[in-house]
Image 1 (cartoon, rainbow, N blue to C red):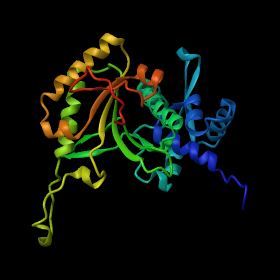
Image 2: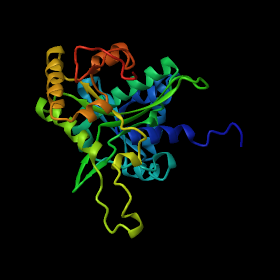
Image 3: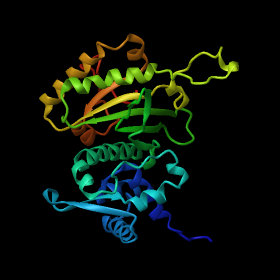
Length: 294
C-alpha cells in the first residue's frame, strides 16, 4: 500500500481545525500545507464540508472571508484519534450562531498560533500545528479552574544538535475586552495553580506519609512560562495593560515570580518581527525587551 494517501491530508485538516476551534482558509493553509496554493486548501475544506465534517460562517466585513469549524459529527470522528486523546470539543462548537459570536477572539488566538508556527519553521525549531492546544482545563478544586487560551509546546534547536531544549508556555490573548484589573487578576489565578495541591479523598493507608504534590507536576516537568499577547488597542492601550500586569505581580509571592517567567508583547510586534525576536517585556521590569525563549 505504498503511495496511497488514505485520507491523511483530510485527517490532518480535521484534527487541526478541531483543536484550533476556528480558522480562516489562509490560516489553515499556513498550518497544514504552507507550500501549496490556497485553492488546494479551499478545495479540501469544501470537500470536508460536503461530508458533514466541517462547516463555516462568512464574514461580510472582511471581504466575505470564510471561517471554518468542525461540526458535531466532525468532533465525534476526531475525538477517536490518539493525537486528540485529551481534546475536549467546545460546547455549542457546531452552532453557527455561537461560532459567529466568538469568531473575533478565536481567530486572534489562531493568528497568534500561526505566528509561532511560522517563526519555528524559519529558525529550524519544532512546533507543529497540534503543539498549540487551546483551552486546556487545569483544576483548582471546588469547581474552579484555570483555562489558558492556549498551551504551547515548543522545541528550540535543530534536530540532531546538542543545544536543543523543550519549552512550554501558557498563552493568554487579550483583545482589550476586559478591564486592566481583570487582566491582572489572571496572574494570581496562575499562582494559585502553581501552588494548588489536590485534596485526596479516601487515601489508602500506605499513602498517608507521602508528601503532597502540586497538581501541575503530573503534567509538566517545570511550570510553563506565562505569555500575554495584547491586541485591540494602540501603543498607549498596550502600555496601560502592561502597567496593570506589573501591578498584579505585587500580589504574587517571590518564588512564583522567580520560577515562572511572565512576559507580555503586542500581537502587532509578534506579526512584524516574529515571536522569537526581543519584543517581549517581563512584567516585573517592562523596560526590558527579551525573547520569550530566553
